[in-house]
Image 1 (tube, rainbow, N blue to C red):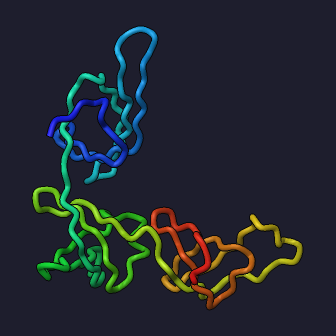
Image 2 (cartoon, rainbow, N blue to C red; image 1 turned 90 degrees about the horizontal axis):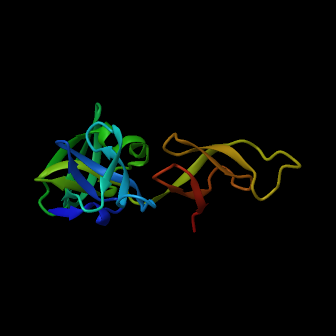
Length: 187
C-alpha cells in the first residue's frame, strides 16, 4: 500500500530498493527555504543493514503489512530455533539471527509473536518482560548502598545483568527482553 512519506511512523515496515526495512526513527523537517521532507532511519529486516534516507513529504513509499501470528517456542536445533503455530500446530525453523540478542531470553513453551510477510516469517517479537531467578550475585559492599548503585548478577538462563544491591541469589526478578535490563523484583 502506498503512503505519503509524511505519514511514515516508527515501527512501520517499508519496501524500499527491493528490501524490507523497519523504521527506527522519523524526523519531519520544514526548512525556511524549499519543501518539507522526512529524514528516515531504517534497518533491513534480513541483514540488519542501516540506512538513512530523505524523502520529500509528497513522495509516496510502499508500506508493508505484516501478519502477526501467535507461536510457541519449542527448542533450539543448532543455530535454528523451532517454533509451533498455536492454531495450526505447524512448526517452523528460524535462524537465531532473526531474533538477535533477545534470543537469550527464550524459554521452552514461551509464547511469542511471529511476523509473517507473504506467509514467510521475517521477525519474532518476545514478550516485553520475563521473570527469571538470580542464581549468583556479588555480595553487598559496605558503604555502597545508594539507591542508584547496581551490582553484577547471573540469571538462571546464564545471562549476566546489573541489579540493585539488595537483590540476592534465589530472588526472582523482571527483566526487559529488548535490552536485558533489570525492571523490578518479581511479585
